Length: 179
Image 1 (cartoon, rainbow, N blue to C red):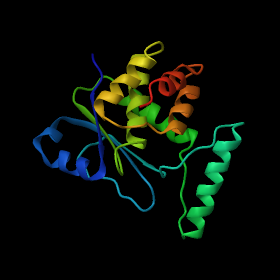
Image 2: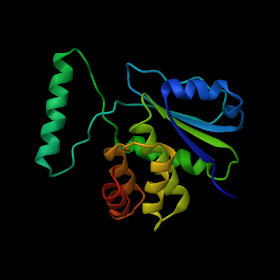
Image 3: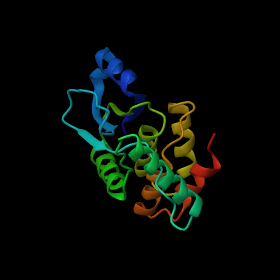
């Protein structure tokens, strides 16, 4: 049985999507939001709520990415904000959720604040789980079709590559096909 169809949207678009009849075949929702954001309300038994912000996860051994992350954290603190980056555990929860909805007929909605980073990364992880090893490039290309201009969150993609044992193939497909 084919996996669910994926829809990748920002918060406002997701709320409108759910109000329309198109939301009727909903099999689940992956809702990603930071402390200052909210997830959409949806009538579905299958829902994954993750709370983290769209902030960079430093690349191990990369001094520049560590510098950017520290600078962003310092800026946030100076402005009274507490931003939380995604963790490997968040990617693992997306993987588990993708496995749980794999054979369901309908639409899986992935949404975050703007629909441009965190939700596309969740969709990419789901596609990667559903297609199995060797289809990483096709998964990246499919997400690009689902959400034009989206740049999936690199930290989540990196975590998923590791957790799924892709040996860098997902990360390589992602970095090779970035807009």
